[in-house]
Image (cartoon, rainbow, N blue to C red):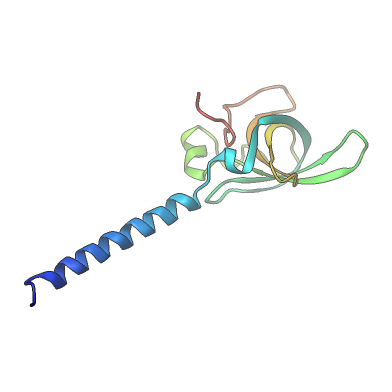
Length: 138
């Protein structure tokens, strides 16, 4: 016995399942800062900016910083998305290659020299708006 319209109901159901799967994949792909960074472990890094990548999905700052023992480490610091940085008043020149800055960061959970960039203090002591990648809303 054939039910009228059963083929179209199958197509609607299949499309709904596909939509749920696609949305779940996109939602999983975007991470919260606490997934990668230890938001309870904030430290200050002081060093020289070696490059800034102003592109999506996140602005990346590369910093050469020396530890207390004098060893140099190259850090990759993840800031917010470009549109959020612009909305918060930052432009592509908020840090320039060669700048020395003190950066507040949340360390990567895996111990690698990567971190979520939270705030920048310029050499003259000025503190712009918080960059905020590892800021968790209260």
